[in-house]
Image (cartoon, rainbow, N blue to C red; front, side, top):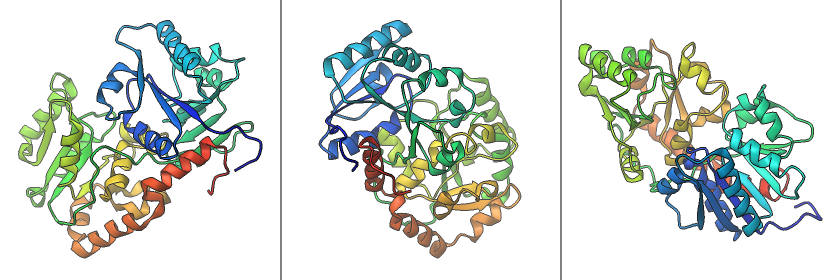
Length: 360
């Protein structure tokens, strides 16, 4: 540790964007293991979903204005007097307004970046950067994509802690593939998916969209109609309601593979791997369930030990070639790699908060 730096005693962890609560668990566990006093300032929805007994304050309810939210967070900072405030989602107008309010006050702010787009032309982010100069990215390839920024401390870590994670049981093949999240064309190549599962040899496989697929949305209705028309309905499982943590974990215990459904030259490619990570990646690494990824992304070396690669023409044969031995070796590789372990990521996170040098 560098000398003459203040000790890390109290941290306020803030999430008011209404999402990304899955990223909180790694930070909470790392801080509590390090015996750092911790308080959470949360959006009401995140607070209701989060499984943690960490002290928390709801600073955003439905209908609250930005001014109300900034005032509420400011009050928590004043009362709690943290030496570090961590934004779980360091973007948006609320974060901007709060940091401009604290621009000339001695409070340290650290941010988690979910999309590198914010470092590529966002005026709001430039205003946030006037006060916050320390950021963590959610993967090594995103950190490298941003490059060096004079005057900033930048690093990365993986958020691999989830509720109810269990050791991967090798019972291959269950012929069950999980797509993290619901039906959403912007995030997943649904047209490509239909082509991938159309072959008769895919009849014995089950594909689970593990997230809420809202049947009132037109894209979900269209997807269901396509499945019905193509005779594929029995191969796909959808959830029309919010998937609880328990259901989520139970489904993953039956999964052979995680399938991100991100393909080049589709909206999914604009969303993921270029500017941000898919949630499927952290789920795969946490549960040690291999991913099936399009070969376009095989250049992301940090995922090689967790992935098998395919293209839209050979998906069927790729699955057929993965026998029990090949599969078991992949899972064991994932279990052995330090970078895929939660304790390694706890250490990375804490080193950054303590201003220690990275081992990158």
